[in-house]
Length: 301
Image (cartoon, rainbow, N blue to C red; front, side, top):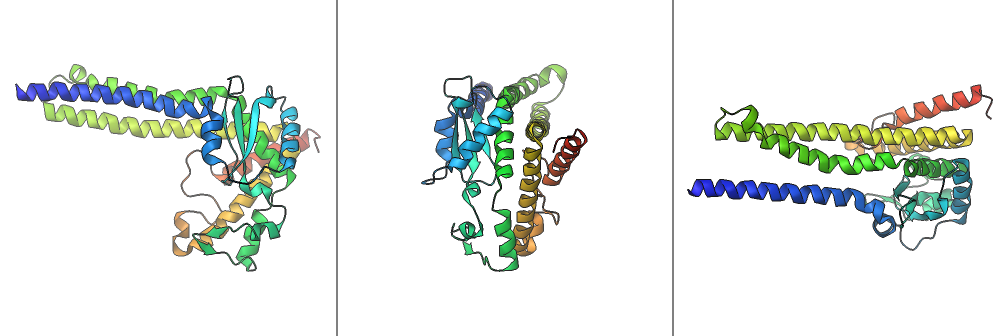
């Protein structure tokens, strides 16, 4: 009797956990796009630093190049990361936001030195060869800014990627639960302990499958954004090549600064060893160079 009661309580607990998990994942995935200013901008905005007017002017130029509808419903802000970021949907009431990387405020090497950037709370010797290379990697060009803005606008144009990404996690969790729940139907002769082991194996395999599928979806979204930005104008493509080259150069510097453990984070070429959402920088760079060659073949200069 006690064992049966414990079993019923366990089943109910699992059902409630899955229900909360599905609902929580749905809210977690959708919330930044429904409330982009409050969540994305609110958490990621770099404090007490206005966005340069040049970025606003470049945004207007880029949005016209991409024939972007409702560009006036996009709010720009400065974020603390190396890459741009975006969230929201322009046809929803709260619109969308685009976060421009913090380092885009630097005009020259002196700005970089005065920015108080450091490596793991250690001062960087900017006059050293490594410091000079890092400074060169952190001074943006107008084409870098244009490519970044075009890349983020391309993300905002593809609401299908956002919808798939938001629905995938809760749907996958629910499907995994329903499959694990039905193990007695397709394996009725299993004892309780082996049935539990089978359920755990299903959950583990499902998690591995989800990570793989989600990674493919995120990287497909990034490739699409790169391609749309690069094909919009050859100058954007050049800006993307320069931007990725700078990031790879910076990664090589960081690899050296990390010392013996640097190889665990970055390759000799400058790719990140572990990457999830973005394809390897060298792969992205190769695609942009191919698009530049196509521009040239078409007579675009």
